[in-house]
Length: 182
Image 1: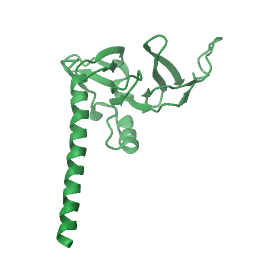
Image 2 (image 1 turned 180 degrees about the vertical axis):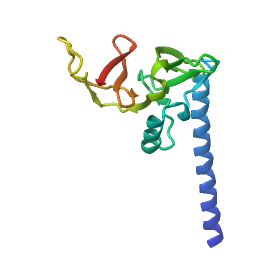
Image 3 (image 1 turned 90 degrees about the horizontal axis):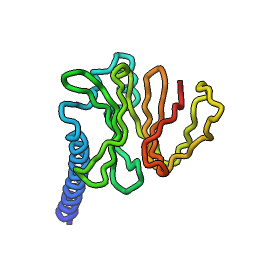
């Protein structure tokens, strides 16, 4: 009886390991498909950031990649990506958001040159339902009311400086920005 329960446990653990490994491969292939849209670019690496930003990222985010956010930004049920990419030759760095309605069919819907701030930026996901509002430091007579995200957003943080939230505007069918910190 002990042999059978040990065998069953080993079988269950093997199946669980295969499922977890398979899910990881699926996620990597989606990211690879998104990266393939930008030949000559690589994800901005941790060591390419300045020392203060690097130390903060290591302390607060562990092993998660500060240059990748994965989420269903447009609410179509398919994973989308936000990436911080650096050109292998020129060093130009950009933040891109890609909608991926099906694997290998990603299209860029947002592209921001962040070259001058590349050493101090990182991105993080923002969950559905988060309330975001424009910083009061921006002088605007028509300041919009706080916005509750209906799909995951992207937090672009300029370490020690500012923060911008990117979100999918369903009405306008595009990524929009709200500066939330200065």
